[in-house]
Image (cartoon, rainbow, N blue to C red; front, top):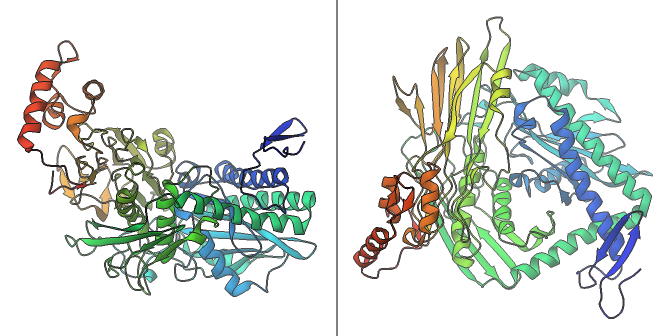
Length: 617
């Protein structure tokens, strides 16, 4: 039954599925609304099924457990029409990679061809992320692309895991693969496979993960073919274009009510991992006008020597994620949004590197850029933006050789904590918004790798105080079980703490410690070092920043945090003005009100700053 003329919702029964369609939905009048909804849902479901396929068939923990990959489906022109529920950092970067592929191979694609690339200077982001594309042909015409991006455990280079922050040029980081055919007409490119095998330390694992990507692309191809068979090639192409147009219209409608203006923000990365103690500036200007918004990263630091430089595709993905995070959740994740979002950064800066820049640890910069972008957006939409997060997950690689000379590499990303939100506390034990990753199982990590995890727990008194506190961070302690290993840690916010918003306090800084309890040697936030059997490395995530005045926090929420050991009784009094009676486990309401009144009076009516940093705390 079609929607009635008086505007009531219509319903059509497809098998046992009842599809409800609102006639006010902004779909082109040339396309049947119900067919469009079914088509759109099928492609997004296919992208998610591709992601499940990777999890089920991959070899490595970094894909199976951390889920450091993305899956998507693109139209014949290379625009992503459906991205799976995986990594936002890849949001927008797939389009850049596909553009590089089409620039080289647009007229040289055939049935059962598969292409790969990872070169940051030709479509990629950093070398461990291998993009894989399978063009789908129906009756000799290209109907779309199945796409999968996955972080490989190793891609060669000077350090196991290929993630070191202290590399100083791209040539130290591993094997660069420009857009290349991995498979032609269904026949593997033996030369490329052998080249990869000879340049990575764990080829069995890498090949297993590449085959998982191939399996995911096969699932995407199957669904594209199914939709073409159902609707016809011309109609399928038209509905793909409509998916982009539909998303663009929804994005414009969501941007329109936001206040026009220019909003900027500055934040700092501790250092680049090479020039220690030299902060690296991030600066963004957000310009909102009508139905369009622009992120201009002019003013960010020049390209650095360490491997934290970002490609423009990373900067785009970060900016897209920032604005996408404050828009309605029912807007589809595809390139239609990006038609109204402009992102720019001068060449030769940390936000748009040039040769021979190193970028293995570019994820760190992406995470920190998201905090910077949120700082600017908080001025435009204060009711939608959280305070600073932990600054991104801590990336850890442990690699070496066993006694029989067989190699091992353990790659883990420790996820994390959010800043306080305008309506609720920050999350703990949850990945940074830009990553959407998961933590690896302690038991599985110990079983598969020569490490012993001694501690994995939340930290007391580290979350930024606020009306809504920041998320509590956690730490991990690893003891090495092999005779020798190279350990690489990528972290930040040891000196520049996660900022609080609207009176919220900054979160506690992070730390990296070698052999706590005996040597207790403090290490910089980015380090590559040799460890021996029995050495213990401990890293602590920074705490999330708080949102709002801590004196406005509900005393019962403070009591709950004290009982959960997220906040100590002393910190409850110091930061929140709340006196907790630990004998009766209740709030001393009279003493609390008296103390809070004294604190407010001492302020003299001064308004809390918009952003609270460590020097303002």
